Image (cartoon, rainbow, N blue to C red):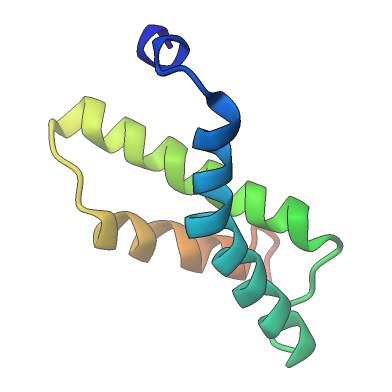
Length: 88
């Protein structure tokens, strides 16, 4: 938090995240919805929920193991998000 506060222009930081990560994620989710492969109530909420889940699992892996494998995190989180929590 201190480094973030000291970094200066938060709007630029958030803009970079939106441009490089969130926009492509929103587009991928929208493409999946348009193709009938995903059922989304709100693409923006789905994108933020996905990023939140990826972030939380990444932080926990890093804290618990001292390492982070982005592919492993994605392989764990994305199928869970796509399958959901309800029994089929």
